[in-house]
Image (tube, rainbow, N blue to C red; front, side):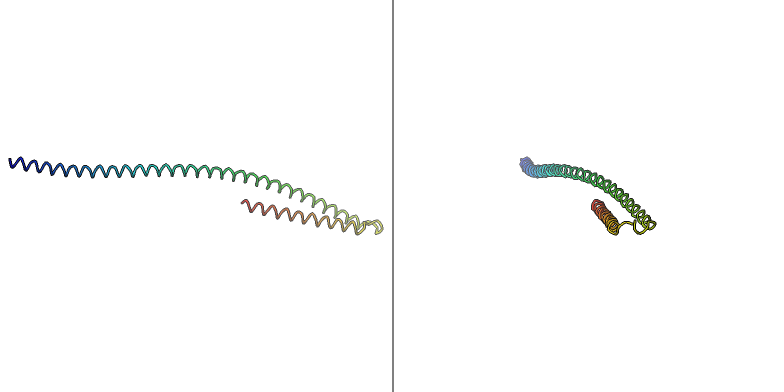
Length: 146
């Protein structure tokens, strides 16, 4: 009987120990499950944030591509304007040189008046300053968008 009593005591002790160990294991599993659920929610939040960031970056890329196309269009337009103005300046310079040569070989009474030659000089200076202004604007625009 004493053996049976000791066996019962040991069984109760083992049962309590087993029960405590089992409860600790359940608590650990519950904590792990809660941590995993929190981690999953955080991962979903991060995913949504990253998707939003991707959308914003795509929009910024589209805007940048459009701005670059506009800059290239303006660049080509300015290049054409510069070429046109260079041609105008060359034509004006050629005309002025022809006028100077004609004036050198004409008798003094048939030479053009100083007012006309002054106008030619002022036109030439105006075209040179306009060309310089356009070139400056073009280089600033090019450097701003590089």
